[in-house]
Image 1: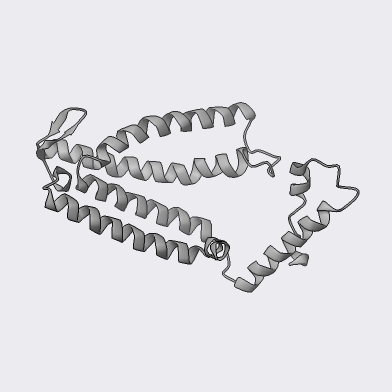
Image 2: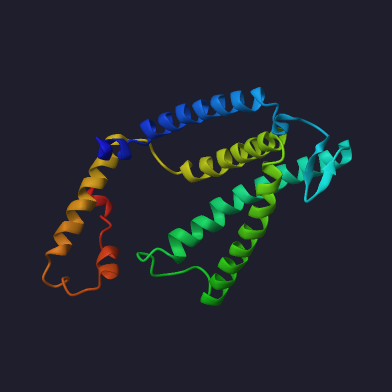
Amino acid sequence: MCRMLFNDQRVVAAGLAVWTLLCVAVFLQIMIANGSAFLAMGPNSKTRLFNVPLDTWPKWWCVAVYTFVSTCIAAFASDSVATFIINTMQDHKTRYILFAKTTCLVIIQVWTTYAVIMGTIGLFVTLMQIDFLIIRLVADLIVNYMTTAYFLNDKIYNVQLYRDWERNQKQLCEDLTFDEELINLPPSDRSLLCVPSPDRV
């Protein structure tokens, strides 16, 4: 049951949606009942960023624009740089890289520094009041829609071909595991061969 659930992301997504709505409803009820300042919108003398009150529209707009632009940059960079780091630099199956090793090290160090500093600022901003949380959510959804559309652009929806590819890849890897000529290869080298050619699909 757990394996079937894990492999059907539609069910997981539906469950996440229900759980999110339930949590939002419960915590909104708690905050409304207790008059939480988090539910305030617009300039508010009680809302403070780094101990500075956001009590005027210029201050509020400055933080609102920062929140939107910063979230767009973060979402775009995450889908670009973080994906490159995971799928190219850190993936043992990828033997070739697009940039020099020094460049790759600089990229990951810049990304780490950016993520720590901007993540800390973003956390403070998001937790101030609900309107900034909404702005951040909207920006994230817009950029994620565009980057996901880019990733899906060259892909074809075909369940049968996907299942055939998945089954053939698993069978190929099993065959390689017992191949006497390949048995002494390191696992990383053997895994490189576990990519079926189009004629096997």
